[in-house]
Length: 44
Ligand SMILES: [Zn+2]
Image 1: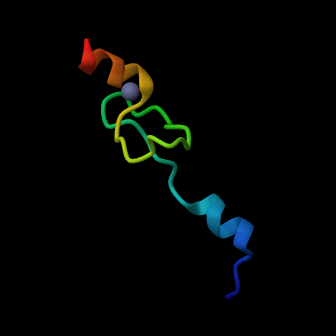
Image 2 (image 1 turned 135 degrees about the vertical axis):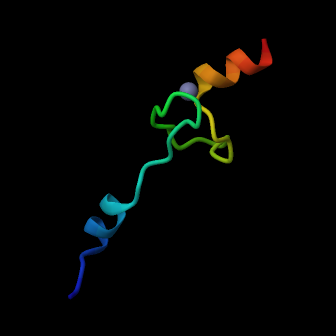
């Protein structure tokens, strides 16, 4: 079976926060496993 590249990327699981499970937006801090909200809690 041949999959279109668009479908392939759509099937990739979105990166989610390990704390709250919220989707993490693609940013330069994408190596993080937590969303901005949970990260701010850590650094407080
Ligand atoms: Zn979070």
